[in-house]
Image (cartoon, rainbow, N blue to C red; front, side, top):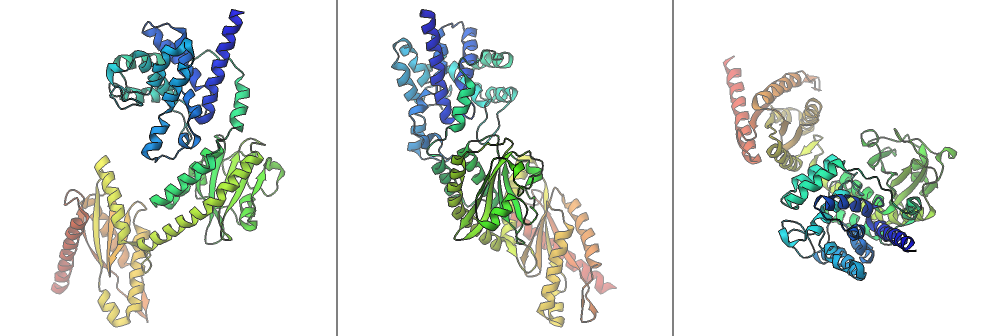
Amino acid sequence: MAQHSELLFFQLAYVLSLLSDLKEREVLAHGHRVAQYAREVFKAFGIEDPNLYYISLFLDIGKLVVPDIILYSPTKIVEEERKLSMRHTIESEKIIASIPILQRYAKFVRWHHERYDGSGFPDGLKGDEIPLEAQILGICDAYAALTEPKPQRKSYTSQEAIKILESERSIKWNPKVADRALKIFREFKIKDKVPVDINLWEEIKRDYRPSTGPLVALYRIADAIGQIMEFDDFLNLVLGSVMEAVRKPEAHYFILIPDDEGKLVVRATIGGKEEIIVGFRLPKGRGISSYVLKSGKAIFINDVTKDKRFYPTPGEKVGSAMAVPMVFKNEILGVIVIESPEKGAFSVDDFEFIKLVSATLAGALKVAKMVKMIKDLAFYDYLTKVHAFAYFEEKFREIKKLAEREGLRFSIVFMDFDNLKQINDKFGHFVGDRTLEKFGLFLKENLRESDVVARYGGDEFVAMLIGASTTEAKQVMERLKHLFKEEVLIVNGHKLELDFSYGISEYKVDSSELQDLIKIADSRMYMMKRKSKESSDNQ
């Protein structure tokens, strides 16, 4: 009878541990993994207490009483919410303390998130103020968490996780604890199975969705709008929020936006083969996404082989799919598509949920598109079809940071289209505008995609040649001068002579500030103009 009761208690302990996994974990049995590692580390310190095994299972049991909205909160939360999210260790302590046989271990659970340097919670303990048992539980919990997948990342390999923990030695972790624990993490392989029917629990987890899932997804999206981020970054954040809420890690998520021709283009994906799929244009009228775009109706297919409208996604195995339009005031802005390699992967609840989210996403997407349009207007010169100088300034700041971090070199080129005044005076400003447009197009076509070109003002242009020294930039510009002279522009039977002058300055060699670099390059450009004029006068 005693043996039966012990087994029952053991299995019930696992049930409680799995309940806490439902709330936040992407995979089950986190507590089981922590307990297995902790048992070995405790042995290495000469501690053999079976009750510590149960404590290891219960580290996160306090999450059962922390609101979902906090556990699933966006990355930016207010201080009070942050404090509440940390309360799960305190709630875990209370639950453990309510069991008389485990009461004296409750503090170890409370303090397993304390850190050696005092940066942990809930009490900010540091060094030897943290009991050895709590330190061991903490590093085992951290290792298990690193090797488990999260909504926004795959799991780290054992080697990667160990490397991370090693880098935190003497900071987050007591060196003595870290050294013994990491040795065990390298050598120990979990063999014991979870002593309950884990398959049934996998079914329970698939059916479980936090009641606040839609709210958190929308909260994240609203937060993204407030940051006015890049349009494609916004779309990726939207997909990440949807993925976290739908909670189907095996599925692939896509956002398709119609282009000017009405063809749907994949603008963002999570789970799909990004290098193949992003930018893929769906043939007009093909696929369930085109049907959704045209009809404005959401579609839910549990076996795509039985639906003739389905068009295969490049490089993907698909069994079932959902496609939902994002509609704002009768305008269909795009389509959210979720595909699973499994047939019958989605429930009616999943379908209703994604329809609810997409209805609100449409308004957010409209705002994001408007922000993008305004930004494009500020960053684009419509006469010459190159970037405006405001864009150039922003890119300079980005490249400067990269140069500081990775030792990248680059040069600034200041260019002036020659004889524009004479062309304007002789043929009119319309022809002058055509020559500037031709020059802008020439620069775009003949500079590398990684380089940045913009109109500075009037007949002046600037370029940033990435990875080029002054000497290398001069070689590039001399080649461009030669090519541009060969360009043909005929007006009223007259062939216009096309040419430009330039000056170069190099980042860090001449200056680290954009305005100084432009002044130096501008000065050198006028030296070139003078030499060219003197040479012409002497002929």
